Image 1 (tube, rainbow, N blue to C red):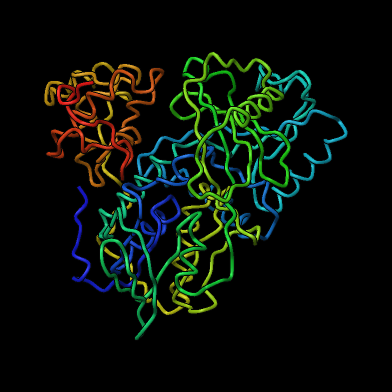
Image 2: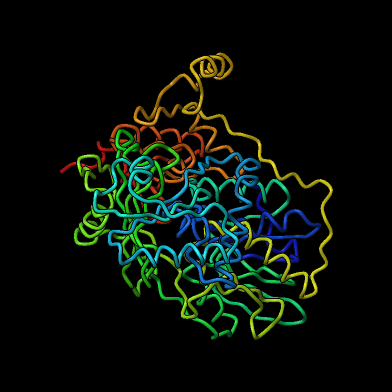
Amino acid sequence: MVKYVKVSDMVYDVVIIGAGVVGAFIARELSGYELKVCLLEKASDVAMGASRANSAIVHAGFDPVPNTLKAILNVRGNKLFPRIVQELNVSFKQIGSLVLCFDKKDIPKLEELQQRGIKNGVEGLDIIYGDRLRELEPNVSPDAVAALYAPSAGIVCPYELTLQAAENAVQNGVDLQLDCEVTAIRHEQQRFILTTTKGMFETRYLVNAAGVYSDKIALLAGDHDFTIHPRKGEYVLLDKKFGNLVNHVIFQLPSDKGKGVLVSPTVDGNLLVGPNAKETSDREDTVTTAEGLAEVVQTARISVPSLNLQGVITSFAGLRATSDKGEFIIGSSALHPHFIHAAGIESPGLTAAPAIGEKVAQLLEENGLHLVHKKSYNPFIKPVPSTRHMSAGQWNALIQTNPEYGRIVCRCEKVTEGDILSSIHRTIGATNLDAVKRRTRAVMGRCQGGFCSPRIVEILSRELNLPAEQITKSGGNSWILAGKTKKHRI
């Protein structure tokens, strides 16, 4: 479990606001140096914003405009991923991507993307036609006349990636404070003083990685330099028996609102479809709509006509932190060089996150932070046993030493009581139903928790020593139970 420190006990070298994938990788990067670092998150867990609801794509890097931060950090991040996922023991598949073209008149647009990618340093880009396209993807539309093939693209589990990066940072000495919302910031005597829902924090350097709230954090310090305009994207997820409908990440030609609706396998064997792009003023608007989901499916069927809605098991929406700059905002605030923004991180932010961590560390050093490598730094995270990834022999051997791994709780995803106990008692432990879900995949199967949720609540209640009615779905007031049924008579 996370070891929390008393706020008054320490003045930090760096405080990072926001424990999404960007904040987690900044924390992990800084944990490799002899620094006192703290990661603050207003939610009850890491990866609670865009990092839990996105396309989960490791982009090759042909889409961003050359020489922009998006382009440079996308390509750098893509190259880092094979090493990062090995160190963090994260599921990753480099399956490649295809951008489909449905009219010969649009082939120059594919050629433009290819040339852009070449300028960005993306390797292996190729425009393919006819038989070669059908060989790679038998189920794409017969109307597709060509495609840009990018073999370096891949897929990952975004919340697993964020959690593992944050845990690795904590294991290397970073302090993590959850349920800790920053409400005021002032600068005095060479320090930033942060007022939060958990008390006061003091730090020499401050990093803003607050996602869709990053402009609000900037305003707390008096910085009006940029604004964030949330853009909602809706998705549908299909059952695993439909996961082999496509073999690559399937895109259509991008628009000014993004890379468009994709069809892609997931690392866990499902099929992901989405997102659309809707402007919203509500920074918590993750509600799906019938109209939005219909748009997603209709657009996806242009690429893959055989997409079968009988396979849909759930839908969800996420928010992208689109800035008025149209670019990643990574640099010192105009107000103070010790206040670093890592804001406006929309796609390809997931891919770029490890490179953003490097970039922020470089900026901190350029602005006076002395970086000394930590001899005890360990970039590897100890694997957490997961029965769904084990052979029958490995599973049986584990049961002999830990009988809890022999008791199935989630039948759809083959998650055991041992898996759930491990999720609760790991470095950053689960404290609610959704946190268990993100760590184990319980509740993510075809029944969407219809059978296993009550048992998980029971286990959480027992292990956290809390009454069952105090167990929440996702923290805050998201109560699941009102009390014992015999106490509530109609």
